[in-house]
Amino acid sequence: MPAAPEAAGLLFGSRLPLLLRYAELLVGPGVERGLLGPREVDRLWDRHLLNCAVLTEAIPDGASVCDVGSGAGLPGVVLAIARPDLHVTLLEPLLRRVTFLSEVTRDLGLRNTTVLRARAEEHDGVYDVVTARAVAPLDRLTRVALGLCRPGGSLLAVKGERAAEELHAVEADLPRRGVERWSIEKFGSGLVAPPTTVVRMIRGRDGRASRRGGAKTSR
Ligand SMILES: C[S@@+](CC[C@H](N)C(=O)[O-])C[C@H]1O[C@@H](n2cnc3c(N)ncnc32)[C@H](O)[C@@H]1O
Image (tube, rainbow, N blue to C red; front, top):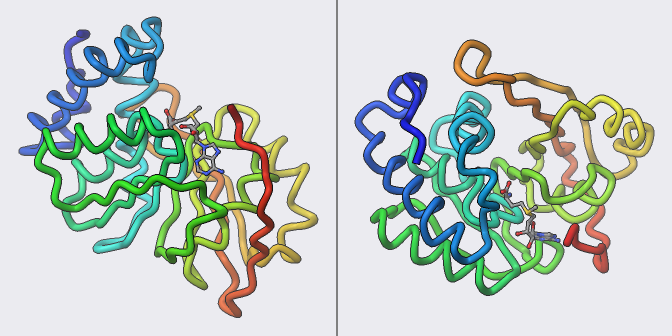
């Protein structure tokens, strides 16, 4: 496993040993079970763990968080390690991923997580913050996940270079879907290269948000 960069120590402090153990589980059983591609091991820190860790800047103290389509735990497990003040629900429909998430949270002794097997559109929880990384295009993501945000809460979609293009394609329809404000934000300059690009959507305070089911998953 590649050595942890200095930024990991700065971001995690006394919680770094937990992150190192999670990294071991990802590159060991995570790769063996096909949850992380073997080619991702060399870029585990920048592209995965730190890319997710810098999202902590975007989340208020004590927030309830739902990580939609958590997969092997990105970003949900990383957020739960970095921020014991959060409660993070790891929402994932696929059994072998849910099994891995349950094993990881047990192994790390994370008391601030709940692992739930469901698709976003089937789940009726409500959270301060909803995160999603590599789950679906913004169009589909807003349809299935915005309703999991409380009124005034944020949907944080971790996106790559095409964030502006994707947002542009959907923004005319956002007010009708119950999004009050939206922005593109960057996190982690100087800590991770490239910085993490996030599309933030804030659900309207009137509580309106369309929850259309039947959306196709990205896999
Ligand atoms: C490409 S993986 C990304 C996993 C993880 N977020 C990451 O960044 O490594 C997409 C994940 O989203 C999940 N997913 C797809 N559609 C979903 C839905 N409607 N509700 C919840 N999870 C969903 C899939 O099962 C899969 O684990």
